[in-house]
Image (cartoon, rainbow, N blue to C red; front, side, top):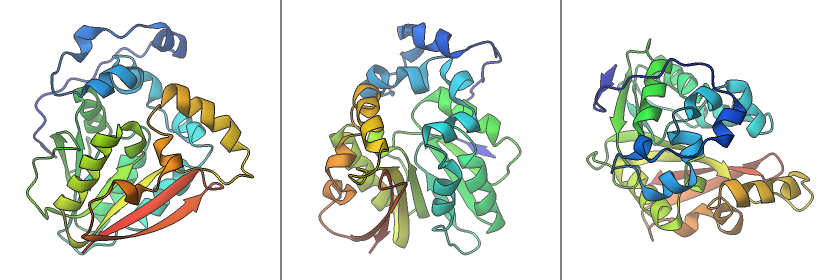
Length: 255
């Protein structure tokens, strides 16, 4: 394991429950890191930054329930896109709760290749380091997906798994441009995220108020295709839909 994120110490208190997390107010002292974007502090403190967040959300069954039983399927569609030769490098552009990173790391290791995970929140990097502590093909990076420090064309592939719906439009545009920048020509940016469900999908009625209240940037992906936030040229795309259109896999190939 390699690490450019500094020393992180995961917490050991396992006593948090849902009520504790929901009833807690954000503690500004926990979010003093000036590198953490304001939108993340304001909108997603309860999911990613609160000291109890990892202890509550880091459950595969819970992530699967949030995705209406589609966690394994959506993980598999990412893995199926990651073809590579030995010695390749793959970048995950934000941490993910559950076994997603474990599964992708195993796949990349089976190809004799390197896996890189970045996040802007130290608490999230500490968590993924713990989950992948037995892996020797992983590097961790404390970076912002919208302004990465990697040189151009550093990776064979990049993965954005339910990241774009959590970003304001301006940040989303920069993150997509950065993903294309750091991927080598011929490489892929594999994106899985929300999409506007088909009219007949009952989850359309259920999900709209949830996203509007808890994930205010997510409805952008119901209104617009991912291509609308991309640079003008230098890529080609293909999209597949899942779960009645609620989820999409969009693959960008860098030209």
